[in-house]
Image (cartoon, rainbow, N blue to C red):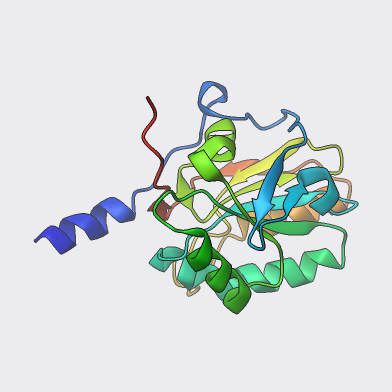
Length: 192
């Protein structure tokens, strides 16, 4: 019974974040610095590509993230060549730096930053893993939400993030600027 309750709680889906709850689509992200999995401080402006960056909130333990890992890696490969870099963010207070480092080295070819104290997650309004934020070359948030519409990669009918990236790269306005993100809740630190 407890396992079933945990499973339901872990796969909560959140509605689109409003401006008061995080960074609104159309807003500009100020440069930030976080530590990567090797302990080096990295800045957003240094990691983004010439056409922007996708921040993807990740988790070591989340089964939804595990279901997305191959799609995330493919997305990162496809768009790095087009000047958009993927940057992983781990904001889970329950996942230690060693576990995050091991998971990142085994699964990803892009940088993963550790968001101690959920500072970036709070600023952006990120609630689940995987949840994405696409910033263009001018650091303007042009898409926020789900990668696509399938937890397991089957029957994908909407490639929300890829569509946003392709619209932006072709000089068109992003047709769908947000899609309901789903996955495991980000485990936040207790705030005093």
